[in-house]
Image 1 (cartoon, rainbow, N blue to C red):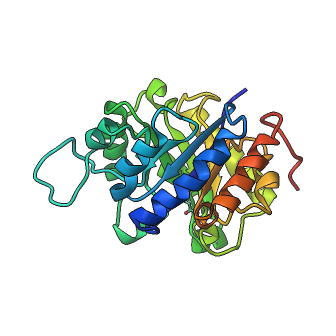
Image 2: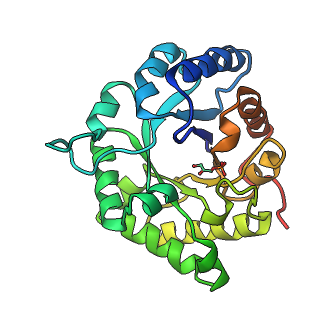
Length: 262
Ligand code: 13P
């Protein structure tokens, strides 16, 4: 059975003190449960990574992901952070192409493809985000957009390399809006992403996570949908109690098929 993933994307929230406080409360809760079947991650701001890595220590019940990295291996790029720098402090993965970065930093597919390469070279797992805007969905272009995002961002990778990537489907209209995608949409889009990955010769191994207004109330149903290997959580990951409720929902999943989604 494939591991179920849960990633808390803290975006630009929490001071270091608040981040340390959160982890101080979370780690004992994780110690108290058997989370061995789960792949749990926190994606804090760069500035908190070292402090949180120290707190996690050998515990390993939860790991660190960065929210971004630079597309070059190193160089004169003031203010940037390389994949190798992240790997050196114990970071295990990097979010690539979050819709907020595609939109505000104008990140395009060729740039994202370069970032994925840097992450793989540094021995970490890329978590490639994809998802359509509301306008694209209204015009019936959601599948075309997601297909293009995947094909162009994964371009140049071998099928073996693609199998080490994880995908996060995050419809833009569901992020931070409280407008979670219906189980029908989630099921349809995850099946479609699986098809696109198969065309790229990457089999069933690539985990496909869902993100967008996932919370303790809806997590169990979402995480039980076919082809949903876990959740990428924004707002609800900022509170320990909400994060732990989603962990509990994940632990309730007995297999990869779960609920019938309609
Ligand atoms: P919300 O869970 O706040 O909708 O954010 C989702 C997200 O963007 C995670 O990367």
